[in-house]
View (cartoon, helix red, strand yellow):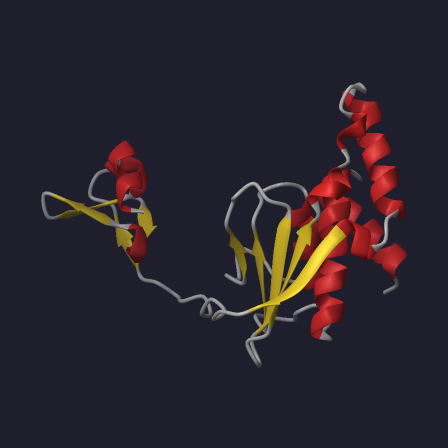
Length: 185
């Protein structure tokens, strides 16, 4: 599939074309190229997204990494940064949007005009102008583990064993456990 077809497929998945999708699309292409790989068929690649924005959809479409397979890791730090790693040898490349690429000159434009100007600019910029690309060290996350399902003693719904908390010796899901649950995450 050529790049134009991949972009059309990505836009169809996401629902619209926007600067954020462009960032993820181009970051995914760079990551795949640097690693010398194509879209994952299963879990041979790992993607780490440091944002929960539009670009994550492009990462899924182009790399084949998904939350459901456990090889798309979300670390929502509000940064337009995507790392892509190859399980076969542990190599990982980090693709970070350059702050300068945001070019806040359009700040005073109405939202629709600002987005259009940013999208056009990002499409014209070279990879080097748009991104900082570097190899990073560190172990790749392990493959997703299949966990047992435990019944919550309060709502009676099934919950992944790793997420269960005990209250008075009884298993409780995070939702029933309440706001204090986040202290343990």
